[in-house]
Structure formats: C-alpha cells, structure tokens
Amino acid sequence: MPAEMDPAFTELPMRSLADAALSRLRQLGVEHGDFRFERIRDNHLSLHDGRLDGSQDSEDVGFAVRVVHEGSWGFASGVDLTADEAVKVAEQAVQVARLCRPLSTERVELADEPSYGDVSWVSAYEVDPFTLPDRDKVSLLGDWSSGLLAHDVVAHADASLHHVLENKFYADLAGTTTTQQRVRTQCQVEIVGIDKETGRFDTMRTLAPPVGRGWEWLTGDAHDWAGELEEMPELLTEKLRAPSVEGGDYDLVIHPSNLFLTIHESVGHATELDRALGYEANYAGTSFATFDKLGVLKYGSPAMNVTGDRTAEHGLSTVGYDDEGVAAQSWDIIKDGVLVGYQLDRAMARMMNLGRSNGCAFADSPSRVPIQRMANVSLQPAENGPSTDELISSVDRGIYVVGDKSWSIDMQRYNFQFTGQRFYKIEGGQLAGQVRDVAYQATTTDFWGSMSVVGGPQTYVLGGAFNCGKAQPGQVAPVSHGCPSALFENVSILNTVQEAGR
Image (tube, rainbow, N blue to C red; front, top):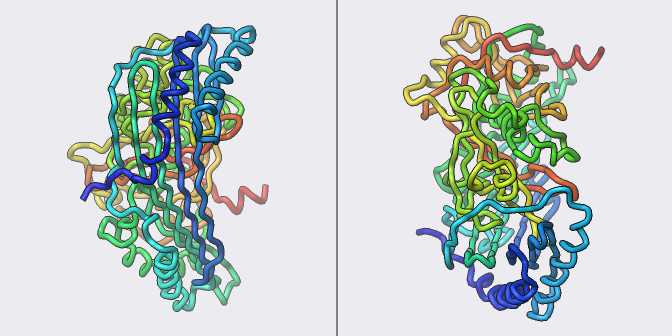
C-alpha cells in the first residue's frame, strides 16, 4: 500500500502560521514571498562487533520566510509556533532584504512557475522506519554482525543504520501550497580482516546503496542482503592476499557501485549552474563547465547521455515540488556527449534567460535558506547494451572496478582520482583474481571521452549518498545517481602504495 502522510505532522499549525506570515508580506508589498515549515526526524544506530555502539534520535521543527523585496533577497526563520512569531519573522525577512539592497550588485528576479493550488506528495516507500522500535533494528544488525564474526578472517564488524523522515509544507503568494513527506534509508556493514601470515589488514563493505525507501529495504526482496553478506568474508580473504597492481594504462569496466560517485563529483557538481557562474566557490570550488560552453563542450564520448531528474522512483533527491514551489521534472544535461543543460533554481534560470527552473532548490533544515542543489544526476544505459559480463569479455587487458571508497577532485571538477572496494584483473576477457592498491586518474573530459561502451538497462543501478555538502554555512543534501556498467579505454592506473611513498 502507498504510504500516507503522517498525521502528527499535518496536525501542526503550519497553515495558520503561513496565513499570518503571507498576509503580512502582502501588506509590506514584496515582489515574492514564501513560507516553509519543516519537521525532520533523524534516527541513527551503529554497532561494533554485534553490540550497540551508538544511538541518536533527533527532531528539527521550525519555519522560515523568504522574500524578494526591492530586488533583494530577505530571509528569516523561527521556532516559536505562534501567529505572532510568524508575523515577526516575515517582518524580519523584509528588513533583511532592505539592509541587503545597497550591497546587491544584481536585481533578483525569479523565473515564472505556474500556481499548483493546494497539493500533496508522498515518496514511494512501504514501511515507515520510525514506527519500529530500535530493538528490532539492533537485533537485525546484531544478527548480521554475528554471522560475519563467525568467520576466521573477520576481526571486526561494524554496522550502521540511518533513517530520515522529512516533512515539508510550503506556501507562497502566487497560490501554491505543497505538503510533502519522504523517507530515506542507508545501511552499511563493513568488516575488517587481518592476514595472520603477513600481518596485512584491510576492509570490505556492503555495496547496497542508500535509497528513498523505508524498512522494507532491509527486509524485502529489493536487495539481496543475505547473499551480499555471505560472500563478504571470502571476498575479503581474497583481497588480503591479492597482489599489488602494476601501474599503467588499462581498459576499465566500472560497476555502478563505483561509477555513481565519479558521476557525482565530475558531472553532478560541475553542472550546477551556480558553480559554473562562480557564485558557489567556498565549498569545493566552482566548475570548468562554464556557461559559455553550453551547447559546445564535448563532455564525453557520443555514448554519454546524462539526465537531471527529480522524479526517479526511490531517488534520494526525488520530490514532488522543490523548495521554491517548482514541480519536479526530468531534463537533459549531457546529450550524445555534449553539455546541453544545467541544474537550476528560479533565480539562476531567470538570470541566464534559460526559461523555467528545473526544480533544484533545496534547504536542509527550516533554519537554512534554499540554495541550488543537485538533482538525481544519472548516466543513461544503452537501450540494447551489453551485460557486465559481456563488457568484461570484450577486454583483453584491463581492470574491473567494484564499490566506492576514497576520491579526490580539484576545485574546478576537472582533475581527479578514485579508488574502490575491490578490483579484479581482466585477462583475455576473463576475471583473473583481485588486485589491490588501485586508483584510476584522469581529467573529466578525457575520462568520459574514453567511455566506448555503455551497458544495457539490466546493468543499471541507482546509487547515491546521504551527505552531499555545499554552501556556506554548510548544508547537506541526499542525492542519487543511476548508471549502468560501462567500458572506459586506456585509463591511467596508479599504484597507491608507490604513489604514497613519493
């Protein structure tokens, strides 16, 4: 059954507060005014060697008022849920706009967006994890950990579980009122192994991605947790005994569990328009994909087709409407290897004459102003593309990359290197055992330009992260990235141990 809106949220006085705030904004004559009320529930558990190591529950409730007044932004927030406070916060937002006006170098105008009336949206999940006692969650993770610790190679097992229930109410002077609810879940299990003969130690982590699902993600059939956990000790044993890689150029077959992060860093952040225009620079820099390159930059090979999507089922960045009242949508960012679009909010869309916003405004709490944030940015599979096994079979000398680990990318989103959970040598179209100490290195355009074959829909996986950081003060946003397996030719491989010794 589809999930229903939590009545504990809808019973909060958000509508009366919105009426009070927006009425005052009308009196003050603002060009734009919106009211946002949020409740964010957060539950995090961690276990070490099967025992509860930490538990945290939090709830953030509050509201914010944002305005455009005399061509300048104004923003204020509050936590006292009374009509008087809502009016006071509305007046503060206008006062902030007036104070900012002499400092503003550009007049703020917003791209047009239709009014949607009074609408609601609930994300696609089945079981609200906040209806379950923590003891059930601890029991499940404890059983998983105990099973792993029974293997000789496993010295330690860490397990973590993170749930978020996010409710947002939005209302603006144009007549849009939205009430939304979404749930997201992340679970990771990591084991540490020690080779008693060599003294070498290493780790192996589950590949299951964070998702816009509820408790069913852990207990249903959407992911084979039992199968993944069962094979981890053997994989770790092989990893501990694997030879160190020989550096050089290799063909790479990259699994979606690794490739999603490369998409996030080299495509997702690089095609945020505020970065491309230089407005976002404090947190991890700007972008090489500047606005003058729109429509002409050869981002990758003709096999590269990337979309921005706020509608993907179970996506972490999936919403019904963004924090500016813009309806969720999907659009092209890279088409046949060429940069054709950016991620936008309403101000950026209007500033650069790009038409309507594509719904990328988000604030991570009621005390934060909405900023342009990442959609679910995904590499599209080839309609009749090959399987992962077929990609591997086409490689004479290469490496198969699985799972994400560490990464590094420069402030322009251009020069990077990525490691992974595990790597397999490919010889004559066959996997020839694991190798270790591997990192692949490239520039963004060289890397995506080397992508010669994209896997089919059967290889597509929606990966992602809970913790994408941006802005100052910093905000954190969840985002998914779907992709198939793909083949990249002649990519530089570094031996990380040798490089560390230089």
